[in-house]
Image (cartoon, rainbow, N blue to C red; front, side, top):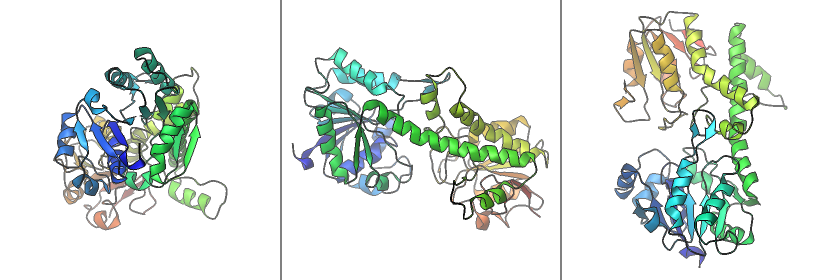
Length: 412
């Protein structure tokens, strides 16, 4: 099996799987993309990106990867089977393993000796061992003897996937030499440092990375709430606290969300019965939409006013709305019974986003009595906003996009 003839099947070709598939194909691997979502398959066949990810569109235009809706046929003859399906939380802080189980159920009848499964989804501690038990209990294969298994977490930032695949160290969780040798052969193609550990440590590394960021942002958000309570300027406080100070760096406040940051604390939290730092961080970050509405109400009434909300994706310059906190912000605004709510999300071409008309920025600014800058997209800045807001309108700017260093400001 030569390096340039590796056959890789990727189960789940969405925001995690598709960039990886295109990256591996560009390295010379033969790639099969597998997904049960007919719209995803249709777009890939048409060589059309269904989401924004720099560098992917160019690779997709020249792709020769095979596309399949069938796991059984799609993994036939593959050296590696990479699983990138979702691992959400149930409503009660409990990891949902149904997608992993479903994939394994479909796989078990098709697995052959010599293959290696690489689990790349973000998972709760113990999930890789759970997958190992499923494979061994439902096939004649034995991990480490005639079959490989590894947990290799995806740790990329959206909008930087292709770049970071060729830069970031790869964490590889294996517990036998067969699996280690197989994963080493594949990931050596990346040209990055490979860091080997066991299943649990690899699972914890991914969760620690995400939860660390989540708690960092929670600290900044809590500081913002405290500063507002004392009528002090959080932006000036953070600027002076960080300036030329070598111990610690306080990030800026903002809406902290997304399918990883907003849920991954729960993958650690479900095994504990006691309140902890992570649960508190979740509560703080979830409080921010309420805080923004409540802060606006200190200065002006929302009832009967036209409100503009700028941004709907979960992070800057992203078209990904999964687990965004903006819908929560909109619900709190609607509780105040405004006259009208306008939405502007320039990164999504749809005219309607989850029941809200997607309006152009200038129309929002001309009509709105109160403007909430929900996400700090590049499209929202001093040049595109200031001077276009109607006179005496209020603006809620948690991200300090306008550079005025005020959470709530009035435009005269």
